[in-house]
Image (cartoon, rainbow, N blue to C red; front, side):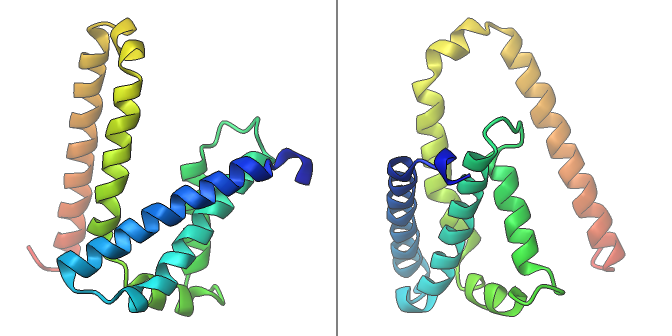
Length: 156
């Protein structure tokens, strides 16, 4: 099983995640005044969960399940109330502001799409229609779920 894991690739991924983690911590400190030392353990836990997801993806390379899906499952398992790691994981990751995480991720996503612009051109105008349908559907699904949850909580 360990033969499927490339040490050089995993080391590079860890380096990149660590750099992004430092960016997030610095952004929180500058923008929100959250102490880097207070948020550091939570960031380490998030990086370890993400690295675990990438390693699982490497162990099962033929799986069509993406690394993001594995990261979601690992995060869920670590934070479930029945999990022995739940209390520590949630206490530490609550010191990380969600919007601080999204800023560098969206920037890297934009760069990634920019690097694939030629591939997008080959898809022609059909990609625009598909994108509009997907974005609209996701928006209304999220709005409906949010409305239902707020209604159940009695906030609206």
